[in-house]
Length: 159
Image (cartoon, rainbow, N blue to C red; front, side):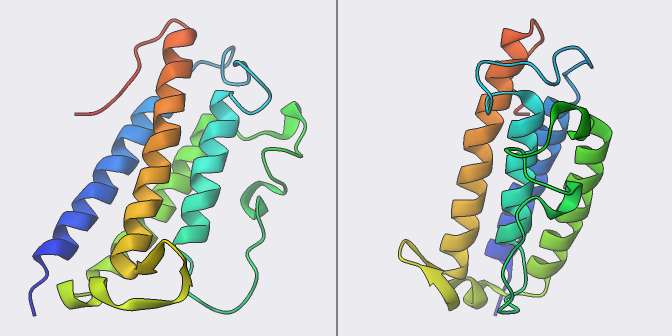
C-alpha cells in the first residue's frame, strides 16, 4: 500500500506548525498578554492550540489527559506572571510537530481509513481525527492572526 496521502497529511501538519510559529513570533513582550478578552490574547490562544494538539496526538493509553500539564496549569487558571513566553510555546510546538510526524510516518494510506478506538461521533477514522485537529488549529491560527493585526503587526502567515 502506498503512502501518498500520509505524506500529504504530514505536509499539512508541517505547514500548520510553521505558520503557527511565524504567527507567535510576530508578538512582542508588550502585546503577548493583551487582547480582546480574557481568552483572546496571543499567549492564551497559542497555549490552547498546543494543548489541544498535544491531546489529539496522544497515543491511546487509556489514561486521562491532564489539560495544561506542560506549564503547570491551563490558560484559564494561570496568572499572567506564570503564562509562558513565546520561546517556550515554540519549543512545545516543535516537540509536538516531531511527535505527530513520527506517528504519521509509521502509517500507510490504508491506515488513514481505519476506525479509531476512541472515535468521536464526527471523527470516526484516523483521517477524520487528523482533519479535525488541523481544522481546529487553523481556526485558532486565524485568531492569532487577527490579534497580530490588532497589535499593529502583520498577520496571517500562510505561505
